[in-house]
Image (cartoon, rainbow, N blue to C red; front, top):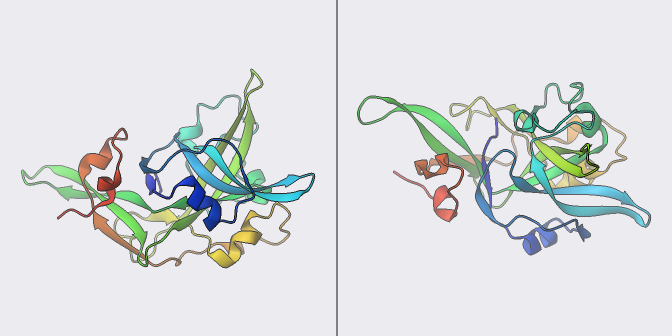
Length: 229
């Protein structure tokens, strides 16, 4: 499961980091509390008359399949399980040719605990690459045309069984795409099995407890990812 994450890198730095050819619309700014249906930043490749171009694009988190009658189910499709992503009708077309990278500083999970009064509670944790830098999550994107003719671009995060490092917090985690596989993963004409481009173990992850302020999606700021005792 990946239901909340953070991204602090600004658009210009993301352009350089991912060697972007084109920015496809106004990007959301840094956000330390990204939630389902929020606008997020995606890296994708699209065919243009002059050739394939690498784009940095604003998309809505929660995939809406092209054949959907409406966009109301997007919040249910924020994640795609790697075990079924190639066959499930909601994802298989996007998996074939509309794969993207979703950059993050890290993501949040909640762990069941008992508070000081003995009542059940949930402690949020921030999970990030142990070496620092971006956690580049594997994603899919899709285009959906509304009845009024407007187009909506949406995305989902591909997840897998969690590694031992973080598995006791939650049994699922986002899949990563390592740098040497970015080009192939983004290539809409890639003619081999894309599953072989995904990584479970990279990067090595670490985690720490954070403030329960992150529980409220309206809260934002770098303090949300800071460790608490």
